[in-house]
Image (cartoon, rainbow, N blue to C red; front, side):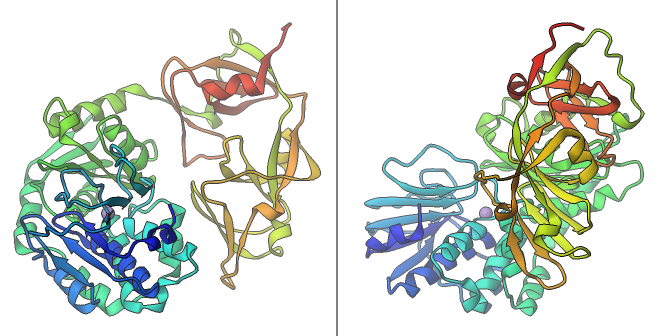
Length: 497
Ligand SMILES: [Mn+2]
């Protein structure tokens, strides 16, 4: 869906979820601004039992001129209803009847609205990001209205625990590009917690559950503003002998949790996704900080028991391998030849000169580096992008002069950190071909593995049952994991060994 698809309607109502938060308000505000720019009259409402009373939101509405109305008894049937930061028909938004429904949301996708227009991407940190992106795609820039850009920033800020759980590159692009009113943001941040919530924080910490064997804490809070969970888990992680913390609350509408990790063997985002898997929610974040939700309907025991049980499973399930100091006994493993394949790579000196400090932004995250003679970027089989040195590249691949193309959900880009200039990388991509003489030993995993490769000592790769643990025949420390569904495509068994 594109925003211009919505311009054919004249009678437009935008509705965010009941008990709105900053992201919901920012999202509705953005659409109001877009429609006004296109000379369309729209109305932005929220419903439900409670009128907004949190002081940061009252400041937001007043100082940033958010054009929202509380309409608990709204009865008119508009031509078009757009729900933002929520999905029509779900329980957190009071139903309003309308001839056509549109949905813009960043939560896990629920049942589709029949005949509805929708734009739902659950991988981004805020609905504000989606609205910002949709508006930019129409050739407009929310920076033209400083109050709106400040609201968008604060929407993302609040939904990602002070930006600490941001992971998607679109969120980062918005953060970098918005020009905001800092004083108002500071004022909102410092009216974030009520005295009652301060007390909830204290009570929650008193009732921690500590698991000594794996050094993690589980802390249950009363239902509160989700930002409190971030406050609790950040603080609790500073405790000695605590390397992972999960803080959560369960309300009738949702279970929200926040994960912090300072253990290199536990990626917070992976743990968050594991906790929420199959439970009607999802997780987001990065290695150190993440958060997520579950839906109470999906749980067959209390939220606390569910979280405790899944944490136990999580710790029990992995074998950890440090490739650098590991020699696997491969005598009983099968030998395979790598099937010749073509991939892409980018020589960084083609993009910016040697010595340029750069930021590489991809779906997997941001990497800061300085360009040198041997620096390349590799485009992997699933479109993942990673830096690689020329020597390593040439040990597996042959360079060609053919261009390389592929589509990305987010096209990788490189920013010159000295000048701010941003270039997309695909125009520089060339095709590389596998050097055919590489032999590997491989075996399907019988247990999930976390693998620290010889090249990534501070970050692991996860492999699941059915994926292949693979070792290069000419380098016993070159251990890596190949996804089960890809293995047959890239390796064929040697006939004699
Ligand atoms: Mn949101």
